[in-house]
Amino acid sequence: MPAFVKCYVRYVDAINRLVGRAVLYLLFVIMGILLFSAVSRYFFDAPVIWGVEMAQFAMVAYFILGGGFALLMNSHVRMDVFYARMTWRRRAKMDSFTFVFLIIYLGLLLYGSVSSTLYSFEFNQHNNSAWAPPIAPVKCIITLGILLTLLQAVSEFFKDIARSKGIVLGVDVPELQLVEANSLDKISAGRPEKRKSGSAAGSHGGPMTGSPVEPCPAYA
Image (cartoon, rainbow, N blue to C red; front, side):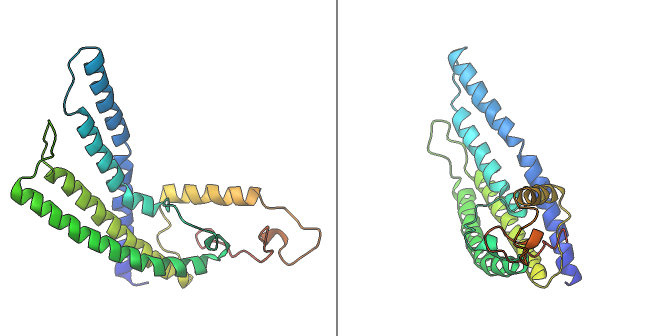
């Protein structure tokens, strides 16, 4: 793969890993806001009007800024009825095809998000509530999250193109290595050690098809 592709994958993965690990702690922020709101209301009879909305804004940041990290960790839900039976090269080809549509979708989503954010700044848009906070900061966070997810989608596209050619790219993420290693251990634990029939599958065959399973390039 070209040097700029390797550089792009390395830096985008590092940025989304850093952002993803940071926004994990927003869960404690959300819990703290809701706890403070409940205690001030029921124990001190001094309810705050900003509690629920602030928790919602923090949840938006937690959800949207973690999108790129979830994509990096391969944590999104996938319908793997046929996908799970494919070799890793066929999976890479399938993923590189579907990532094209994801990149187009995220590009359109980013365009709409930027337009909506500019509109909020131009007209000083506020939320229609008793607290009435400005909406522009939240929309900036949403735009940033979509941008990070788009950059990560391009990174995953490059990785799948490389894997379809038998080249390992972008596997030096500690959390991803841990997740994939645990998955491989579970698969190995559930696979019979030896077949009495002496079929070609042996210890490498799948439990249903009996065909050889091609090893993942990251652990080959």
